Amino acid sequence: MKKKITILLPAYNEEASFPLIEQGMSQVVAENPDYDWEFLLINDGSTDKTLQQMIRLHQNDARYNYIDLSRNYGKKMAMMAGFDYATGDALIIMDVDMQHLVSVIPEMLRHWEEGYDDVYAQRQVSKESWLKRKTSQWYYKLLQSLTHVPIQKDTGDFRLLDRSCVDALKQMRETKRNTKGMYSWIGFRKKGIFYQQQERQTGKSKWSAQSLFHLALNGIMSYTTAPLKLASVFGLMVSFHTTASIRSREVYLSLNFLKTNLTRKKLTGTTMANTASGATSLLNPSHRNRLSRIMWRK
Image (cartoon, rainbow, N blue to C red; front, side, top):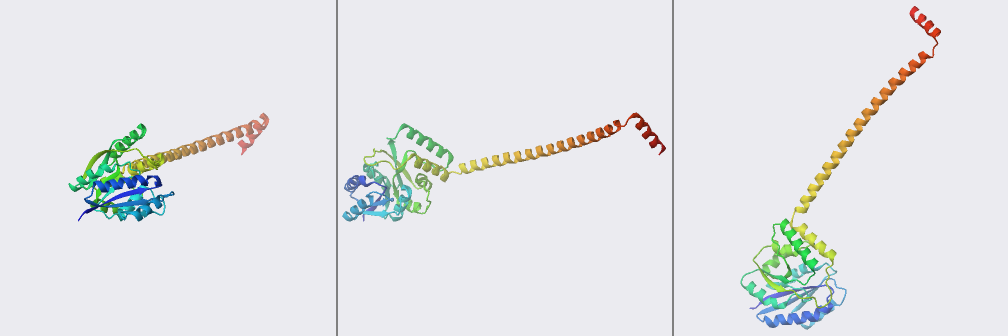
C-alpha cells in the first residue's frame, strides 16, 4: 500500500497563483509516483476569487480538497486548520506562489524514508533586500541568545513533517503562533536541506513591516522569559524610585513645618517684647516715677 503525502497550501487573495499551483502539483505527482497525494488548500478569508479556484480544482481532481475559513485569520492559523484536517502519513507545507521549489520534494521524501521526522528547507540564497536580511539575522541571533530552544536560521514553513510531528503540533492550540519555534520545541529527528528560494511570479507579499514586527515580537515573547524578567526589574526600579521620592517629600514637608513653627514662635516673642517696651516708653518721666511709687507702696 502506498504512503500518502499531504501538501498543505494556505492562500489569501492568491487567485493569480492557481495556474502555478496546478503546474507544480502535476510535476510533484509525475516525479513521485510511489506515493498517493492529497493537496489541501486553505482559503484564509480571501476577498478575490481564490475560493472559486479551489472549488474548481476540487471538482476536476479529487486529490484537491479545500477548507474555507470564515475570515482572514493569518497564515499560521490557516496552517493549524490544515494540521487538523490533513490525512497524509506526512505533510509538506508550501507557499501557493511557488517560491518553494517542488524539485526539493524528492529529497525531502528520501530523508523522511531514512527516519527523519522534520525535514526543513533552508534558504541558500535570499532574494530579499540587504536591510531585511540583516534585520532577520539580528533577530535570530537575539532570539537564540534569549531562549534555550534551538531555532533554525534562514528557515521558514517549507518543510516535511511526519505524522507524529503533525499530531504534536495539533495539541498546541495557541492563537498567536510562532511556528518556527514550535517546530523546534516539539523536538523529533530533524534534517536540513538547502534550496534557492524563487522570486514571486504573481501578486505581492501579504507580509507588511508591521505584521513582520508583530511576528518577531511574538516569537520572543513565546519562547523566553527574558521580557518578563526585564519588566519585573524595571517595575522594581520604578517602585523603589517612587517610594524614595515619597519619603524625601515627607521629610521635606516635616522639616519645613518645624521651621515655620519655630519662626512663628520667634516672631511672637519679639512682638510681645516690642509691645511692652513701646508701652513703657509712652509714659513720660513723671508718670514713670509715680507708677514706681505706687508699685513700691503696694
